Length: 211
Image 1 (cartoon, rainbow, N blue to C red):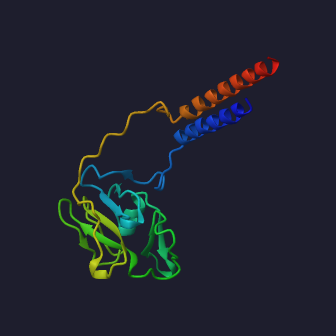
Image 2 (cartoon, helix red, strand yellow; image 1 turned 90 degrees about the horizontal axis):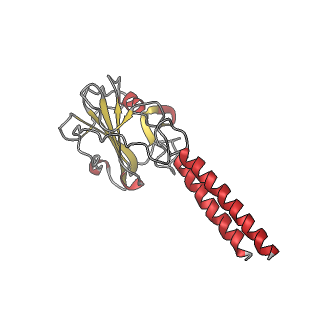
Image 3 (spheres, rainbow, N blue to C red; image 1 turned 45 degrees about the vertical axis):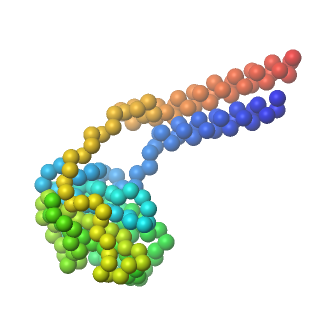
């Protein structure tokens, strides 16, 4: 009989956690910048970030409209950047916080660094021959970033996503976990269930003690 409240509270904790997780999905990009997926037309620049063996899904983001250079394309696509020491964003050290264990106070090692690629829509990736701040991306083009680990400069891998503009999948319909206005329905439902279960458990415990 004493184990019942422990199990009850464990179940409540699980339900509450599920409600919380449905209320605030994590986002890896800078809010308010760019859009997810390929640019829908030839007026923006599609940015592809392939983390390779750092783990995580390849990011495909659109920087809408004309872009001054490669850095602004990254920023306007909504990506979080860290530059290298005194060089700033002229040399990219981290994208979306990766690699997490790398210091940006000095030049990253050649065997663990980001490589910069460019392509026309429908073309092939080519290693950029100019710095990211010197590259002026044409409208409708692709900008690619790929992490190279334990490879020499000549063997840096290009992004594993072809630079071909595709139609983006439609946004998913609202689910029971969250309503269209962003209200955390899942959290509220979870809290109500927790309250009901706790109340039922207390009533049952009182009746058993009386019996």
